[in-house]
Amino acid sequence: MHKTSFKAALSGVLLTAAFASPAVAQSNPSAQQLINQLKPNGSLSDTTRGIKPITPGEAPASAIQASPTSMPEMSAPAAASRPIPAAPSANLIVDFASGSAALTPHAKETLNQLGKALTSPQLAAYNFKIVGHTDTTGTVAQNQILSEQRADAVKSYLETKFDVAGARLQASGVGEADLAVQTPPNTPNRRNRRVEIINIGQ
Image (cartoon, rainbow, N blue to C red; front, side):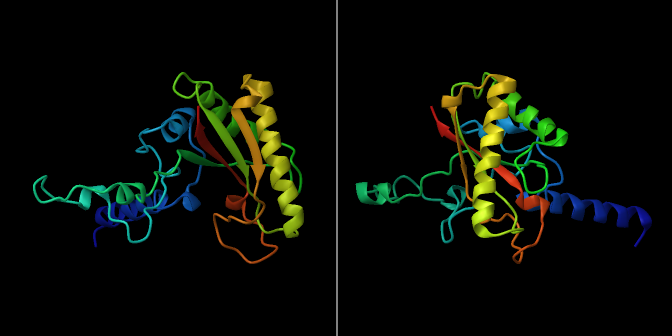
């Protein structure tokens, strides 16, 4: 294989890996990317962090090819059983001091992008849930408390730095219960120390 062809093939592999899942993303999104992820019916073309997987067995809408004359009218129970689209969301890797809820300078840089997004005209009318996550270092009970404290720290920073009304933000934590990357107990992993932002409507 020629050197040029090899480089092109390698670039294609790296690009595919970078957009394969939230777990492999190398950097946090910009304010504009967060706006795109968090606004209802927003474009997710800039990043795949906010994409929710299709329910197993569910066919994509584009795969359904039926003419109006051949498609039977959907009954009310069938319509009610259709899956509800996932709420717009985004995952941020937020750097905290080890074992604490203290925000590092890098964490503040990340949250500055979130603050700009939440105060933008596109998102200013919406409320959001802030969900704290941890890795598996420490006990389950310790991580539950730590995740709640870190979500509270993010909420407090957004209120103080960007004047986001406290009523717009709900902070909660799930500890190590929802890992982005599956790891054994007592395994540090930066990608699991994340904060999920979910648009919960107006």
